[in-house]
Image (tube, rainbow, N blue to C red; front, side):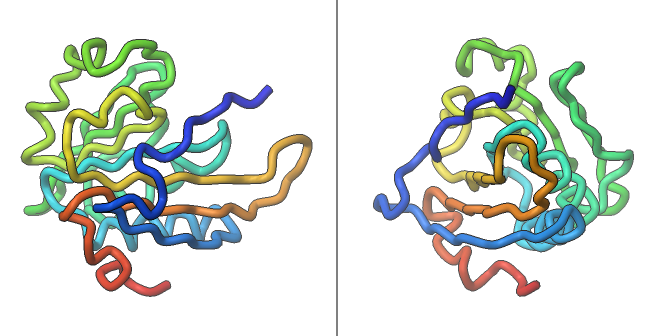
Length: 177
């Protein structure tokens, strides 16, 4: 059974949002997209990932980690809730959170000290809808849709929703594939 996911935190076309739809044909392309997104990330950025189980959220995050040049293999933090990947060079750390098993909002997330980590890190939260939006007025929401059911179709539709002034130039900043 597939877990349901919520709609993007801000409606497409709402004031202060920029939306970019992309087609991804394989896990390798999903990792590449992560590397491309990493090229525009900076300390203090919040990235929310939404998608069905197996949609490619962790694969995208692996690409983010590669692009940011962080230490350690990026794997799903489902059972540990959060992992910190320190930078190998002068860039920001990657804080990778899986909020799937957390039922509450930001109150339940406070123990993770994400508000403390955010200014000097890139914080990526899987399943963060309704839980972490209050951390930042500016955030990148990545919504990954895939065919559900008994299929081995690797195609994904990825919607990047840049919320706030930080992401106003998303269409021009994101490196081409």
